[in-house]
Image 1 (cartoon, rainbow, N blue to C red):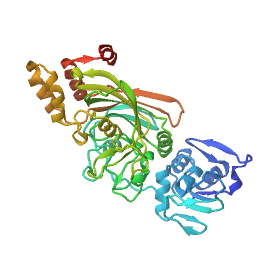
Image 2 (image 1 turned 120 degrees about the vertical axis):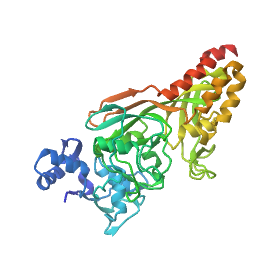
Image 3 (image 1 turned 90 degrees about the horizontal axis):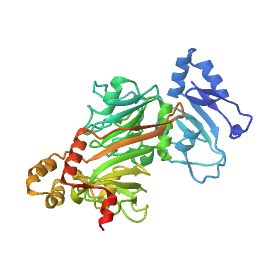
Image 4 (image 1 turned 45 degrees about the horizontal axis):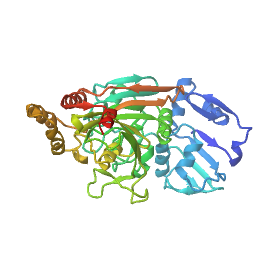
Length: 422
């Protein structure tokens, strides 16, 4: 069994560190790992990345940070481990404070507490590998960037046990196992670290190996997947710090009143519809709503003012954030039946602006809307192994491009051109 023992003074300058790819480990831990793990470098690396059986015995020092969660503190003491893995260990009864087992991940630790933790074994994957074609934009030993098609679910969940992106990835490679509970149903543009209130339990039927952020079933575009636990933890931290660059484009029902702006409205679950989120103006403490902010910019006004091509940049990663904020602005995404971008609304906007000769084409256009017109067009992040900033862009798929082309035929103008007319 691997062991990590230290006292509160272990952060003194005399402590030595050496680099052992892919994570940095205290010198005394490296000696234990060398003595008790397999002899080969490859298997040493595998055991370290796995963390299974690693023991931490340490006394909490006064950090002057106010309340400090148990899962956060343990995560900070074992470099490279994911918080979900720590939470699983806590819930499995493998963590004690001052000799008493603590099963609550949000338990607050205080100075002088002696914490003992054993990292749990990785649970077997519940998702089965499937030979599903994937559009892989980039891949190396640590990460994979995928262009997810619309109508594909990212991970297995009740009602979608097969045919998901995760099933396809598992056919191609093995991934770190991070489990999540059945409670999580929504997933559009959501960061795991931004939505911890949904519950991260290893006991649930839904597992999401390598997944650090998600796109909704109807959303197409770029998504990054971690191929080892160190990369998972590194990317999750970037999402939590909001340093990941994410750019989306959408087609809206109607046109924003301003050519660009920032929407700041807390988002929570709609009490009248459990599969929908809603933007709630006012205090962030309203119910379970959480702070959410999005920046938008009109790229092009379409269909003589009936629609717009809008760019979105996320400051936070809430469930269905763009869709909820667009509805809040009065411009639901075209084709988004859940958030008000219905076919009837599209017809009411386009019909008065369309000549009689184009009515047939208009009806065909609207009837062909099968998903929210939302595409993750750009993604940038710091590579978890090399430290280099990498960036990817991906044009929208054929269905999005075809609708955009038809809206341009009805009429198009740039935002500046409209301002000149006013």
